Length: 311
Picture 1 (cartoon, rainbow, N blue to C red):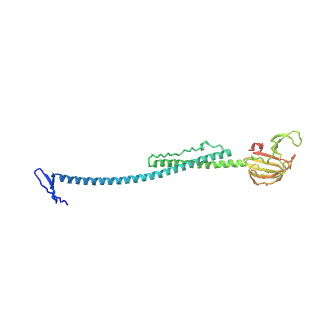
Picture 2: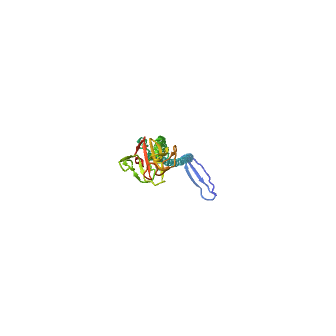
Picture 3: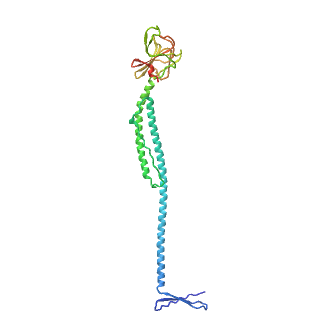
């Protein structure tokens, strides 16, 4: 074991001498250092301790900032993902609404054309296409994009309200036009060839001279079903000397139709009938040269060519 013995000897040059005296017979060893060196070492240690403390504190603060930044980035990433999902949902919903609005407009125009109403250019609605491109390098906060889509939705809402009004305003004229089309005597009362048309013809009874034929004749077979050519109310159902068993239907709009020479009547006066409904059976009653159906149409009490109303 070596015992260290410190001997401090100050000489006139301010040195400190350290002497090591071993227990064995080994020679004594000594060295000297300047007197200011222990103080320098002490100050250096203090500075090192303070500096280490400052560095540790700074490192701790940096760690806290890093953790806070990491948490913020994580939260922004979650918000970003959520907003992307919301934007995608809004886009799809917007596209579906636009497609439905466009389809509604197309169907409304189609219905109008079908019933004979020309679509009005004033009723056309221009539909915008809502598209928001999502870039992976864009700002994580997509609130502005969402706000833009919501603005487009507000515009779509206005167009929905406008379209609803257009459809509502169109229903009444469509219903009226549809009622007219159903009442219009537009179908042939029987499936048979026409043997005599509307207008002047040779007198079928005397074969001399000519007479004005007020309707058209169908070469239908005896007992064949006669159908109403349009919706209406039976104004007459009974016997007429010249027309035999006869049915007259009032269709409204100044229109009426007449079915003569029937063998049997299936409706009575006052009955409401629908287009295509059976009203009588073909016969040969009244002033007739053979089994057939005589059919007339009148507009405001004046005979017109029935063929002009057939679809």
